[in-house]
Length: 275
Length: 289
Image (cartoon, rainbow over the protein chains, first blue to last red):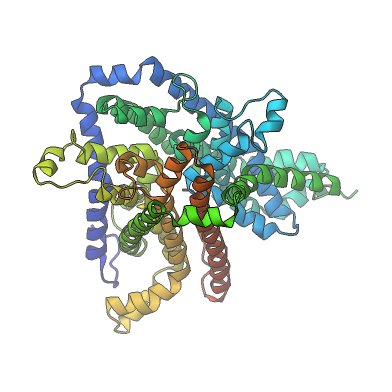
């Protein structure tokens, strides 16, 4: 059933090719993962999913991702605010640089962060003299995940801040609100959905991250081993059932999270439409 | 009494300083240290590391992979955005969600999927073995994993641009007697070229830099199944730090070129957008990769 007849040609061809390619590249391989997981049997899957080493890796993955997302929520807001509101020399270069974590291969980010934060590194040495070890500890994992997630918060907030009508803030001021009151009670509520969306996107990205973390984490089982690395290790031992079990757990978590983010985005779109 | 509608100078300066300090710490320093470490032992050592046969083999494989993955996903992006942005059909929003799927999947899991399909214990493993075809731990696996990981990039960029453009101009061209191919070449392509270019740039950056997915399926055979990011890992794990950073600096340069190209494209997009009759509402969240 086509809603509206269009004079444009090529519907069947382009949709047909798109569906074919989508099935071939994405859907069939994903279905294979689900079928394979089922073929190992629930017992084996459950055991691998709840093994102590797997549980420790979920704790680290979720904990460090959450910590990184919160750091990005705070500093991402400051960066987005400064980039949108305050003209300063070099702003365009800084703005372009925010996308670096999207563009820089994760392995490069990983070795760069590791040598910065190692005990002999530029940042690791002063931090070590303060008694803080970063590389090869869970803090290092958090640092790498902060790097990876930063653009999500900034890039989600920027358009919303740009679209904010200055008249609303002027109205608040003319009605007697102090600047702090105007920001807290007018600006922040307006950007709250986008802020939450950006933070969740940064969290979701951090959950699956591998390349930038493996170098700085030190990969000690039960201590600094993230869930994607456990998958990798199990694959190297030809334990496909174990690898698949943890992969399915991680996938379900990211799909649930992205579902929630989609709801959030439609909520913020509705709010935008009301204003 | 006039109430302020912006922050005091002191607050502004403080916020700018905090933002710049954070970005310097988390973005600039990692970038700087790559080049500092790469050139630590001088230009000679740098060039030697970059020109070493295994590094060149890795570079060739990286270029080959991108040369297959980017055009394949470009073709898909064009087809999908034509179908989605130009026609209404049931299931359109489901299709949009499915296109984004690979973004939601950990790179390691993306690699695992292909091991489960084509590996020795995988669904097609016995058949491939019998016909002496290697997919996993060989070049085809690397290409497949890269195509999977970079699948959404072009489509994600192009769909919002084409939706913003509207279909009026194309319909007019068809009514005036243009063929489908003429419409695409003369009307659609000139209108969306910057968005398209941006998608290709992002797709290429990810294709050349992918690490996790490729690492799972590659088998790390030097000179044969090593891409540049994998070569960086091997050198680093062998404590050849200077060589690792020298090779990494090539990828960092690619990232810088990508960022510059992105800025230029965005600037061109704005410049050409102003001339059009319609204000293109560009999806600004699109770089959420």
